[in-house]
Length: 111
DNA sequence: CGATTGACGTACG
DNA sequence: TCGTACGCCAATC
Image 1 (cartoon, rainbow, N blue to C red):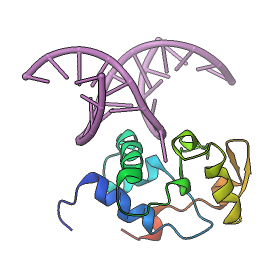
Image 2 (cartoon, rainbow, N blue to C red):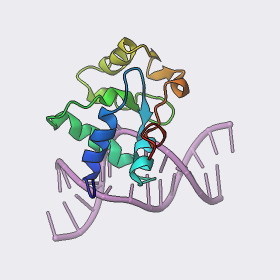
Image 3 (cartoon, rainbow, N blue to C red):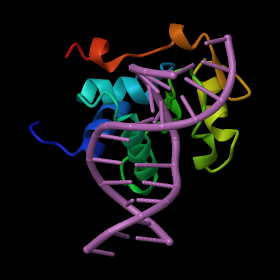
């Protein structure tokens, strides 16, 4: 794993997010070493839809647990709906107890 | 080929 | 406490 593309790294991390868990763009960016590269993670997610890989992008939200990218899904409620199916509680665009379901790659993957 | 945008986050005033 | 500015890299116009 030397120079895996930023996008590919994001995919690998997101795909490893366990069910019922969520993480943030910044956490992934930080894990990849690009602290301020959270925007790139967002781009990677956007590309994940066009990618052949199945990326659970609904498990990736901003740092406050807000479903900022739900509009990119087929339906605006699809993202929240999927999260609810995984046992998460979502109110509007906000994940309830986000910190309790937070999955930090730099910790879980024990970099 | 140059400028702008984009699913974010942190810093500063 | 709230609002604005900047940084990161890639894709699109």
